[in-house]
Amino acid sequence: MSPPPPPPLRPVLRVDFPGERLGRGKIALLEQIRDTGSISAAGRAMGMSYRRAWQLVSALNTMFAEEAVALQRGGKQGGGASLTPFGEELIRRFRAMEEQSAAAMAEDLAWLEAARRKADDPL
Image (cartoon, rainbow, N blue to C red):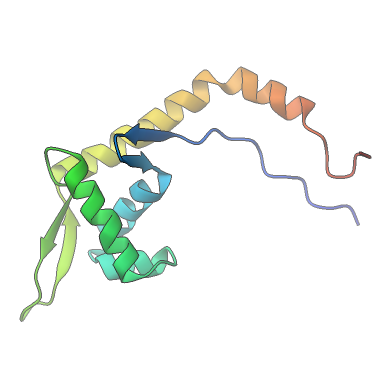
């Protein structure tokens, strides 16, 4: 039986800010918060601790002039989190940048893929 084919090549977008960065992980966390309404549930879905998820949310909320995540303190209704309109726009624009960069590099990625050594090729 031959090994499964390797996954396709894909570019990874990361935007470096002074002392901080914005990448797929923070955007995925925002998407999970949007879907779950909770930082802890979002962190669990991504296999990270609440503390780590909270650190990333805090970093996101201080990177920009507007917050990406709005927090609701506990109480009768319990705590929770939701995306602000800015947070929604941040996801939309980041995903659009990913698509645009992949499209711009499609020809070169195809060339790299064609030149890539296959798993069953001899060294």
